[in-house]
Amino acid sequence: MSSRMAGSTLLRHLGPRLFFSAAAGEPACSLLLSGSASLAPARSPAAVLVRLFPVRMTSTTAAKAFGGEQEGEAKPSAASREPTAVPPSERKAVASYWGIQPSKIIKEDGTPWRWSCFMPWETYKADTSIDLKKHHVPATLLDKLAYWMVKALRVPTDIFFQRRYGCRAMMLETVAAVPGMVGGMLLHLRSLRRFEQSGGWIRSLLEEAENERMHLMTFMEVAQPRWYERALVIAVQGVFFNAYFLGYLVSPRFAHRVTGYLEEEAIHSYTEFLRDLEAGEIDNVPAPAIAIDYWRLPADATLKDVVMVVRADEAHHRDVNHFASDIHYRGMELKDIPAPLGYH
Ligand SMILES: [Fe+2]
Ligand SMILES: [Fe+2]
Image (cartoon, rainbow, N blue to C red):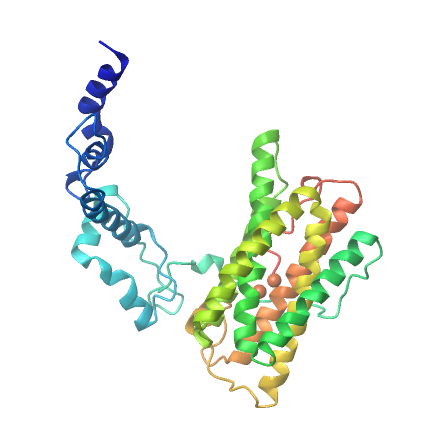
Protein backbone atom coordinates (compact mmCIF):
# COMPACT_ATOMS: atom_id res chain seq x y z
CA MET A 1 0.00 0.00 0.00
CA SER A 2 1.40 3.36 -0.96
CA SER A 3 1.94 5.90 1.75
CA ARG A 4 -0.82 8.13 0.26
CA MET A 5 -3.34 5.31 0.40
CA ALA A 6 -2.29 4.42 3.91
CA GLY A 7 -2.77 8.03 4.93
CA SER A 8 -6.24 8.15 3.40
CA THR A 9 -7.28 4.94 5.16
CA LEU A 10 -5.98 6.18 8.51
CA LEU A 11 -7.80 9.51 8.16
CA ARG A 12 -11.07 7.77 7.24
CA HIS A 13 -10.87 5.62 10.37
CA LEU A 14 -9.52 8.14 12.86
CA GLY A 15 -10.99 11.35 11.46
CA PRO A 16 -14.42 11.10 13.11
CA ARG A 17 -12.79 10.37 16.48
CA LEU A 18 -10.27 13.17 16.17
CA PHE A 19 -12.49 15.94 14.89
CA PHE A 20 -16.03 15.09 15.99
CA SER A 21 -17.80 18.21 17.19
CA ALA A 22 -20.38 17.24 19.76
CA ALA A 23 -21.60 20.84 20.10
CA ALA A 24 -22.53 21.02 16.45
CA GLY A 25 -23.79 17.47 16.34
CA GLU A 26 -21.76 16.91 13.21
CA PRO A 27 -18.35 15.45 12.49
CA ALA A 28 -16.15 18.43 11.79
CA CYS A 29 -13.77 16.14 9.95
CA SER A 30 -16.25 15.87 7.12
CA LEU A 31 -15.71 19.58 6.53
CA LEU A 32 -11.98 19.09 6.29
CA LEU A 33 -12.21 15.97 4.21
CA SER A 34 -14.76 17.48 1.87
CA GLY A 35 -12.20 20.06 0.80
CA SER A 36 -9.77 17.35 -0.33
CA ALA A 37 -10.37 16.11 -3.87
CA SER A 38 -8.35 12.99 -3.27
CA LEU A 39 -10.40 11.82 -0.28
CA ALA A 40 -13.99 12.79 -1.04
CA PRO A 41 -16.10 14.37 -3.74
CA ALA A 42 -15.23 18.02 -4.19
CA ARG A 43 -17.53 20.72 -2.73
CA SER A 44 -17.62 24.38 -3.55
CA PRO A 45 -15.76 26.66 -1.06
CA ALA A 46 -19.05 28.40 -0.27
CA ALA A 47 -20.65 25.10 0.71
CA VAL A 48 -17.71 24.31 2.98
CA LEU A 49 -17.98 27.74 4.64
CA VAL A 50 -21.73 27.39 5.16
CA ARG A 51 -21.12 24.09 6.91
CA LEU A 52 -18.09 25.32 8.87
CA PHE A 53 -19.74 28.38 10.41
CA PRO A 54 -22.32 26.61 12.58
CA VAL A 55 -19.46 24.63 14.15
CA ARG A 56 -17.48 27.76 15.00
CA MET A 57 -20.48 29.72 16.27
CA THR A 58 -21.76 26.95 18.50
CA SER A 59 -18.34 26.39 19.96
CA THR A 60 -17.88 30.10 20.82
CA THR A 61 -21.28 30.44 22.44
CA ALA A 62 -20.77 27.40 24.62
CA ALA A 63 -17.36 28.63 25.78
CA LYS A 64 -18.85 31.96 26.87
CA ALA A 65 -21.68 30.30 28.69
CA PHE A 66 -19.51 28.63 31.28
CA GLY A 67 -16.00 29.95 30.88
CA GLY A 68 -16.24 33.58 29.88
CA GLU A 69 -16.01 36.53 32.21
CA GLN A 70 -19.18 38.40 32.92
CA GLU A 71 -17.78 41.74 33.87
CA GLY A 72 -20.44 44.28 34.62
CA GLU A 73 -22.93 41.47 35.12
CA ALA A 74 -24.86 43.68 37.46
CA LYS A 75 -25.63 46.09 34.65
CA PRO A 76 -28.85 45.17 32.88
CA SER A 77 -27.31 46.01 29.51
CA ALA A 78 -24.28 43.81 30.09
CA ALA A 79 -26.39 41.04 31.56
CA SER A 80 -28.56 41.00 28.48
CA ARG A 81 -25.45 40.81 26.30
CA GLU A 82 -23.79 37.69 27.66
CA PRO A 83 -25.72 35.21 29.72
CA THR A 84 -28.82 35.16 27.51
CA ALA A 85 -26.81 33.71 24.62
CA VAL A 86 -27.59 30.23 25.98
CA PRO A 87 -30.79 29.37 27.89
CA PRO A 88 -30.19 29.00 31.66
CA SER A 89 -31.29 25.34 31.63
CA GLU A 90 -28.72 24.53 28.97
CA ARG A 91 -25.97 26.43 30.78
CA LYS A 92 -26.66 24.47 33.95
CA ALA A 93 -26.47 21.24 31.99
CA VAL A 94 -23.08 22.19 30.52
CA ALA A 95 -21.72 23.16 33.92
CA SER A 96 -22.98 19.96 35.52
CA TYR A 97 -21.44 17.82 32.84
CA TRP A 98 -17.95 19.13 33.71
CA GLY A 99 -18.61 19.15 37.43
CA ILE A 100 -18.20 22.92 37.59
CA GLN A 101 -20.97 24.79 39.34
CA PRO A 102 -21.19 28.59 39.51
CA SER A 103 -19.98 29.64 42.96
CA LYS A 104 -22.58 31.11 45.27
CA ILE A 105 -20.81 33.70 47.37
CA ILE A 106 -22.54 35.84 49.94
CA LYS A 107 -21.26 39.26 50.94
CA GLU A 108 -20.77 40.35 54.56
CA ASP A 109 -24.14 42.12 54.46
CA GLY A 110 -25.90 38.90 53.41
CA THR A 111 -26.52 39.89 49.79
CA PRO A 112 -25.25 37.68 46.96
CA TRP A 113 -21.87 38.51 45.41
CA ARG A 114 -22.68 39.64 41.91
CA TRP A 115 -19.29 39.71 40.18
CA SER A 116 -17.59 36.86 38.46
CA CYS A 117 -14.59 38.90 37.34
CA PHE A 118 -13.26 39.32 40.90
CA MET A 119 -13.94 37.74 44.27
CA PRO A 120 -14.46 39.32 47.70
CA TRP A 121 -11.00 38.22 48.87
CA GLU A 122 -9.43 40.19 46.02
CA THR A 123 -11.01 43.46 47.14
CA TYR A 124 -9.16 45.96 49.32
CA LYS A 125 -9.20 49.41 50.85
CA ALA A 126 -6.82 51.66 48.94
CA ASP A 127 -4.13 53.40 50.95
CA THR A 128 -4.87 56.98 49.97
CA SER A 129 -2.29 58.33 52.41
CA ILE A 130 0.55 57.42 50.04
CA ASP A 131 2.87 60.26 49.03
CA LEU A 132 1.65 61.41 45.62
CA LYS A 133 4.52 63.81 45.02
CA LYS A 134 7.37 61.31 45.04
CA HIS A 135 9.36 61.55 41.84
CA HIS A 136 12.34 59.67 40.51
CA VAL A 137 14.86 62.25 39.32
CA PRO A 138 16.36 60.88 36.09
CA ALA A 139 20.11 60.62 36.53
CA THR A 140 21.41 58.22 33.89
CA LEU A 141 21.05 58.57 30.14
CA LEU A 142 18.59 55.66 30.09
CA ASP A 143 16.45 57.29 32.80
CA LYS A 144 16.43 60.59 30.92
CA LEU A 145 15.39 58.80 27.76
CA ALA A 146 12.54 57.08 29.63
CA TYR A 147 11.46 60.34 31.25
CA TRP A 148 11.42 62.43 28.08
CA MET A 149 9.77 59.66 26.09
CA VAL A 150 6.85 59.63 28.53
CA LYS A 151 6.72 63.45 28.58
CA ALA A 152 6.62 63.46 24.76
CA LEU A 153 3.75 60.94 24.76
CA ARG A 154 1.75 63.34 26.89
CA VAL A 155 1.65 66.00 24.17
CA PRO A 156 -0.59 64.11 21.69
CA THR A 157 -2.68 62.84 24.62
CA ASP A 158 -3.31 66.41 25.82
CA ILE A 159 -4.19 67.54 22.30
CA PHE A 160 -6.54 64.65 21.66
CA PHE A 161 -8.41 64.54 24.97
CA GLN A 162 -7.91 68.06 26.35
CA ARG A 163 -10.05 68.16 29.51
CA ARG A 164 -12.27 65.16 28.81
CA TYR A 165 -10.81 63.35 31.81
CA GLY A 166 -13.30 60.47 31.86
CA CYS A 167 -12.34 59.43 28.33
CA ARG A 168 -8.72 60.20 28.99
CA ALA A 169 -8.70 57.95 32.06
CA MET A 170 -10.36 55.15 30.16
CA MET A 171 -7.88 55.33 27.28
CA LEU A 172 -4.94 55.68 29.65
CA GLU A 173 -5.93 52.47 31.41
CA THR A 174 -5.98 50.51 28.16
CA VAL A 175 -2.25 51.30 27.91
CA ALA A 176 -1.44 51.10 31.61
CA ALA A 177 -2.64 47.50 31.85
CA VAL A 178 -0.06 46.33 29.30
CA PRO A 179 3.35 46.62 31.07
CA GLY A 180 2.46 44.39 34.04
CA MET A 181 1.18 41.67 31.73
CA VAL A 182 4.24 41.84 29.47
CA GLY A 183 6.69 41.89 32.40
CA GLY A 184 4.83 39.09 34.20
CA MET A 185 4.70 36.98 31.05
CA LEU A 186 8.40 37.41 30.31
CA LEU A 187 9.36 36.60 33.90
CA HIS A 188 7.11 33.56 33.74
CA LEU A 189 8.88 32.33 30.60
CA ARG A 190 12.27 33.04 32.16
CA SER A 191 11.30 31.05 35.25
CA LEU A 192 10.38 28.10 33.03
CA ARG A 193 13.55 28.35 30.95
CA ARG A 194 15.91 28.69 33.86
CA PHE A 195 14.18 26.36 36.33
CA GLU A 196 14.11 29.11 38.97
CA GLN A 197 11.68 31.01 41.20
CA SER A 198 10.69 34.56 40.39
CA GLY A 199 10.70 35.87 43.95
CA GLY A 200 6.97 36.63 43.65
CA TRP A 201 7.50 39.15 40.85
CA ILE A 202 5.41 37.27 38.29
CA ARG A 203 2.39 37.47 40.54
CA SER A 204 3.14 41.03 41.57
CA LEU A 205 3.29 42.27 37.97
CA LEU A 206 0.21 40.31 36.96
CA GLU A 207 -1.60 41.76 39.98
CA GLU A 208 -0.69 45.21 38.69
CA ALA A 209 -2.04 44.37 35.22
CA GLU A 210 -5.27 43.08 36.73
CA ASN A 211 -5.59 46.13 38.94
CA GLU A 212 -5.17 48.40 35.91
CA ARG A 213 -7.78 46.43 34.02
CA MET A 214 -10.18 46.94 36.93
CA HIS A 215 -9.56 50.68 36.58
CA LEU A 216 -10.63 50.32 32.95
CA MET A 217 -13.74 48.30 33.85
CA THR A 218 -14.64 51.05 36.34
CA PHE A 219 -14.21 53.96 33.95
CA MET A 220 -16.14 52.13 31.24
CA GLU A 221 -19.16 52.57 33.54
CA VAL A 222 -18.88 56.36 33.48
CA ALA A 223 -17.60 56.97 29.92
CA GLN A 224 -18.29 54.91 26.84
CA PRO A 225 -15.68 55.02 24.07
CA ARG A 226 -16.72 56.20 20.65
CA TRP A 227 -15.95 54.19 17.54
CA TYR A 228 -12.83 56.18 16.64
CA GLU A 229 -11.56 55.89 20.22
CA ARG A 230 -11.97 52.13 20.03
CA ALA A 231 -10.01 52.17 16.76
CA LEU A 232 -7.33 54.28 18.42
CA VAL A 233 -7.05 51.79 21.30
CA ILE A 234 -6.47 48.94 18.85
CA ALA A 235 -3.74 50.87 17.04
CA VAL A 236 -2.07 52.08 20.25
CA GLN A 237 -2.19 48.62 21.80
CA GLY A 238 -0.64 47.06 18.70
CA VAL A 239 2.27 49.48 18.80
CA PHE A 240 2.71 49.78 22.56
CA PHE A 241 2.53 46.07 23.34
CA ASN A 242 5.18 45.19 20.79
CA ALA A 243 7.41 48.14 21.67
CA TYR A 244 7.20 47.37 25.39
CA PHE A 245 7.78 43.67 24.79
CA LEU A 246 10.97 44.37 22.86
CA GLY A 247 12.01 47.06 25.32
CA TYR A 248 11.60 44.66 28.24
CA LEU A 249 13.62 41.98 26.46
CA VAL A 250 16.47 44.39 25.77
CA SER A 251 16.45 46.30 29.07
CA PRO A 252 14.06 45.54 31.94
CA ARG A 253 15.56 48.45 33.90
CA PHE A 254 14.50 50.82 31.12
CA ALA A 255 11.07 49.21 30.73
CA HIS A 256 10.27 49.48 34.45
CA ARG A 257 11.54 53.06 34.51
CA VAL A 258 9.24 53.95 31.61
CA THR A 259 6.31 52.42 33.51
CA GLY A 260 7.33 54.32 36.66
CA TYR A 261 7.17 57.60 34.74
CA LEU A 262 3.90 56.60 33.07
CA GLU A 263 2.46 56.11 36.56
CA GLU A 264 3.72 59.54 37.60
CA GLU A 265 1.84 60.97 34.61
CA ALA A 266 -1.25 58.99 35.58
CA ILE A 267 -1.13 60.55 39.06
CA HIS A 268 -0.95 63.98 37.44
CA SER A 269 -3.92 63.20 35.15
CA TYR A 270 -6.08 62.00 38.03
CA THR A 271 -5.14 65.05 40.08
CA GLU A 272 -6.41 67.25 37.22
CA PHE A 273 -9.54 65.08 37.03
CA LEU A 274 -10.15 65.65 40.75
CA ARG A 275 -9.63 69.38 40.36
CA ASP A 276 -12.37 69.55 37.73
CA LEU A 277 -14.66 67.39 39.87
CA GLU A 278 -14.15 69.68 42.86
CA ALA A 279 -14.70 72.76 40.71
CA GLY A 280 -18.02 71.33 39.52
CA GLU A 281 -16.91 71.21 35.89
CA ILE A 282 -17.49 67.45 35.85
CA ASP A 283 -20.57 65.95 37.50
CA ASN A 284 -19.67 64.10 40.66
CA VAL A 285 -21.98 61.19 39.86
CA PRO A 286 -22.49 58.19 42.18
CA ALA A 287 -19.66 55.65 42.06
CA PRO A 288 -20.26 52.60 39.85
CA ALA A 289 -21.29 49.47 41.76
CA ILE A 290 -18.20 47.60 40.58
CA ALA A 291 -15.96 50.27 42.14
CA ILE A 292 -17.85 50.21 45.45
CA ASP A 293 -17.31 46.47 45.76
CA TYR A 294 -13.73 46.38 44.46
CA TRP A 295 -12.36 49.15 46.71
CA ARG A 296 -14.80 48.50 49.56
CA LEU A 297 -16.15 52.03 49.27
CA PRO A 298 -19.21 53.23 51.20
CA ALA A 299 -22.56 52.76 49.43
CA ASP A 300 -22.89 56.53 48.91
CA ALA A 301 -19.42 56.91 47.36
CA THR A 302 -19.06 59.19 44.36
CA LEU A 303 -16.87 59.45 41.28
CA LYS A 304 -14.51 61.66 43.31
CA ASP A 305 -13.91 58.82 45.78
CA VAL A 306 -13.24 56.47 42.88
CA VAL A 307 -10.71 58.81 41.30
CA MET A 308 -8.94 59.16 44.67
CA VAL A 309 -8.52 55.40 45.13
CA VAL A 310 -7.45 54.91 41.51
CA ARG A 311 -4.87 57.65 41.92
CA ALA A 312 -3.58 55.93 45.08
CA ASP A 313 -3.24 52.70 43.07
CA GLU A 314 -1.19 54.53 40.45
CA ALA A 315 1.13 55.85 43.14
CA HIS A 316 1.70 52.27 44.33
CA HIS A 317 2.43 51.13 40.76
CA ARG A 318 4.89 54.02 40.44
CA ASP A 319 6.78 52.83 43.52
CA VAL A 320 6.82 49.18 42.44
CA ASN A 321 8.15 49.96 38.96
CA HIS A 322 10.82 52.44 40.03
CA PHE A 323 11.83 49.91 42.73
CA ALA A 324 12.06 47.16 40.08
CA SER A 325 14.19 49.39 37.89
CA ASP A 326 16.47 50.24 40.86
CA ILE A 327 16.98 46.52 41.54
CA HIS A 328 18.25 46.07 37.98
CA TYR A 329 20.41 49.17 38.30
CA ARG A 330 22.14 47.57 41.28
CA GLY A 331 23.14 44.63 39.13
CA MET A 332 20.60 42.24 40.61
CA GLU A 333 17.64 40.43 39.14
CA LEU A 334 14.10 40.89 40.41
CA LYS A 335 14.04 37.39 41.90
CA ASP A 336 16.86 38.42 44.28
CA ILE A 337 14.55 40.80 46.16
CA PRO A 338 11.11 39.64 47.37
CA ALA A 339 8.29 41.23 45.39
CA PRO A 340 5.93 43.68 47.12
CA LEU A 341 2.91 41.37 46.83
CA GLY A 342 -0.44 42.90 47.76
CA TYR A 343 1.07 46.40 47.83
CA HIS A 344 -2.01 48.64 47.47
FE1 LIG B 1 -4.65 52.70 36.28
FE1 LIG C 1 -1.02 52.29 37.24
